[in-house]
Image 1 (cartoon, rainbow, N blue to C red):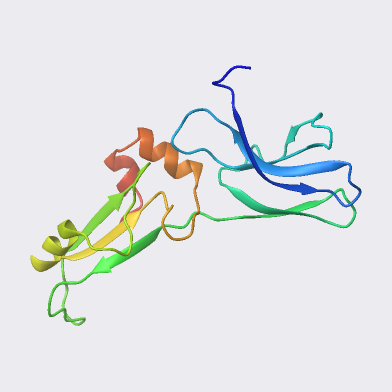
Image 2: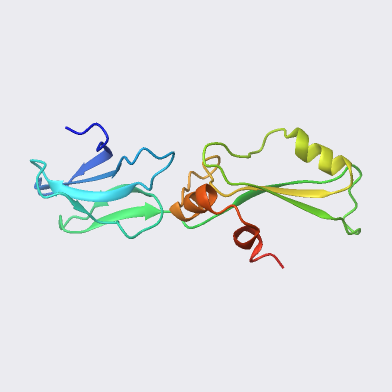
Amino acid sequence: MDVFQLEYASDPQISPDGKKIAYLGFDDKLQGYQVTCLSIMNRDGSGKKLITEDLDRDVRSPVWAGDAKTIYFQYDGRQIHGWIVKPPDFNPNKKYPLVLEIHGGPFANYGDRFSMENQLYSAAGYVVLYTTLIVYCISYTNSLFFVHHSLSEWSARFLFSDCR
């Protein structure tokens, strides 16, 4: 057995006819994050087939339909969670400069907790919008799209191409 070819598997679900097992998992590539996919196999472990290989986000909660041929599962869309810190004595009728503070991971995140940096920006008169591209924190939606971009493309072209 090659130690570097490990497979992570969880949430096994036996088909109603007892012939197949659906499960969640991934081939461990020793990365900080990998997309959890849906696979099926025969009950003896043979005939493994990856079902959601082309989906760029995690799947969860597999459930067999009564016909033992259909599997339902959930997946999350690309959502970016964010929080806003407003200056002291914020006036909604006044315009403020905005600081867009993006954290992309891959191993840490922003959340609904104290951040000295964001408080200092706010105290200086800025509205701060701080976000986490890899959203381990609230919804547990992990998209490979964001993971790959946060690991390899920290460029203004990527981060700000849609800002207007």
